[in-house]
Image (tube, rainbow, N blue to C red):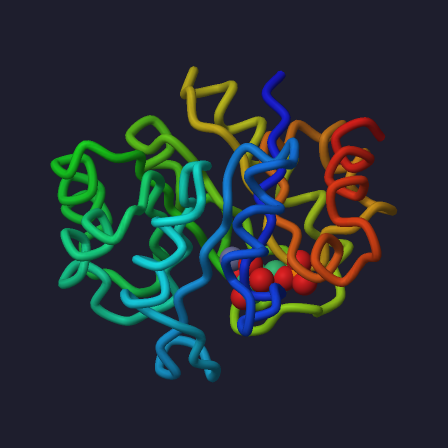
Length: 216
Ligand code: DX5
Ligand code: ZN
């Protein structure tokens, strides 16, 4: 089974993004998670294209971009140009998820769909065989450093069962409150990609933390 760590740049030192990218390049992390927040879909604002372009210059790993913005369909091309290799949008933010999936695929990049913890997993059923990735939020989107919602394991199991039943091939990513304590249990439940922000960047040795998360 694929096991990937995608550290979230949101918890990096924004005064030294180059160093954060170099750490990622040297690490066993396969992707770098980029959280884009607009202050409308979520209460917080993070960063946009200029920061992504800078990161793209230094980071050799695929940028795994998580859009927490309204009208994401307007910006698909710009995000692809800014370096997104995986572009994930919130189901809650679009009128027509199938159209959004096609827009992203047309850019020749991978497409992901995501939902907040209060959205039923069953609503994703029509899309799981059309996307490369399903991201289940394990906190409410908006901030790093929140506590993992324990009920998420039921949602992961439900998604996994749906994927097997439909013979779909998307990977499962989770985001929010992931740490050394829950990483192995998440992989055991069939999660393929762990996003970890504070658990990676707020440790003394991020390289070792990434290694240990994969080995737990
Ligand atoms: C939250 C973001 C997350 C966040 C995770 O809205 O989508 O990617 O950076 O941070 P931690 O791992 O600290 O919960
Ligand atoms: Zn995220």
